[in-house]
Image 1 (cartoon, rainbow, N blue to C red):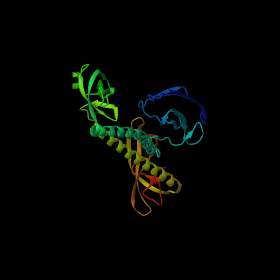
Image 2 (cartoon, one colour):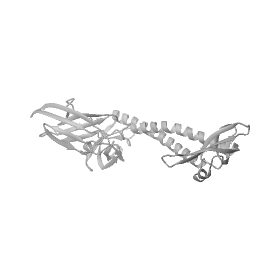
Image 3 (cartoon, rainbow, N blue to C red):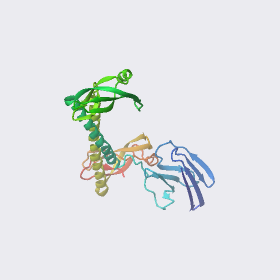
Image 4 (cartoon, rainbow, N blue to C red):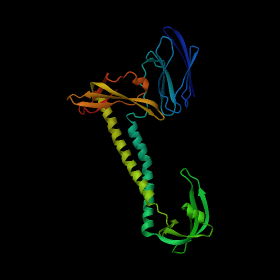
Length: 318
């Protein structure tokens, strides 16, 4: 919960504004010159944005920004920040920014690389079980049930002697029917790897399909994350290039697409169409923005965009 206090002078006199902002529920409680008002919000979402409040004779807004960990608050009165006296920078959702796609790709890649390595090791072990394993008689020593998110796992602890005469103790999961039948002293055929007898399992277990599925998922995820990194880097480079050398073009707003993003709240994307310098019709899309910013756009209205002179299909809505 954040508490803020502002005192400032305008042409019509001295004003005092107190704010209590609940971080989780998002409730904003204002006390403006002694008058209390409460604004509700969607709980557990990103509460960044600009929120109008009543200050007689003035366009008054609370501006909330975040760095991902904490919120910052400022008052914007008649288009100027109380803190700086200057027009504030536009507050926009972090998600969907120019760097977000590349950052998401890097994050996903960093997670999936160790997953792919672990699955590859498991796949190699499964291959060895199918091509070079040995069998022995295992004697059950104990059994237990492990509760998990996706259901219980039934596990047996057993002892077996490998082909060199060395005794090994291991445990492994088995089907429910096998678990119910097993008793201390029960005997089952154990499959193990001769070059590494510490890897063993009750005969009949086969992880080929689960490993193949996980490997397919890991490969798909790595390909997608690589695409996101490359595409995000290109978007960022294109935006920097357009900002530096872009030519202004008048486009027409074709659609205001509203999306309710979990953890962020309501957002709007401006879609537009324009003709490039060669007369070819092009389409573009602006960044995610909060409804308070998108309110100035209307379908069919003109909007100024910047177009890359060398790649007229690339455009930027400032």
